[in-house]
Image 1: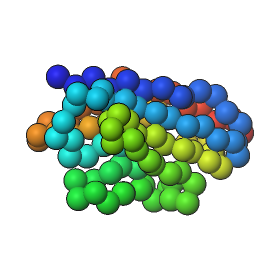
Image 2: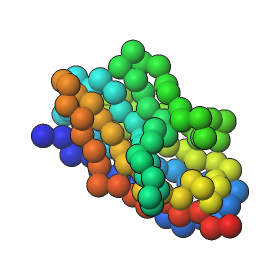
Image 3: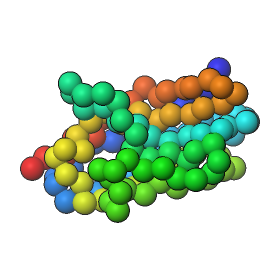
Image 4: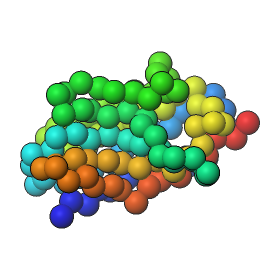
Amino acid sequence: QVQLVESGGGLVEAGGSLRLSCAAGRTVVNIAAMGWYRQAPGKERELVARFATDGRINYGDSVKGRFAISRNKLRNTVYLQMDSLKPEDTAVYYCFLQRLGTDYWGQGTQVTVSS
């Protein structure tokens, strides 16, 4: 069983920045993919940014150029730096990890951007 611990959400004004982090624990091995998705009220969950199974980084179209994902492989931790935030970025952000064909999700952290 993999537990994902998220932190860093909150309330910020438009144009501001936030940094999210997600830790899977140092003992987790065989991580194939890890990253972030988000879900706004009334909308489907969508990709924000992730390290794919081939090692490449995928970004959602709406965040390209504003958000940046990074990771600490030794600590199995991923970070999401969010800059130039917009009200439409308001959502619950979920950490995601794929391991041995199984998907794991964090509990979610709320990000609210005021106009």
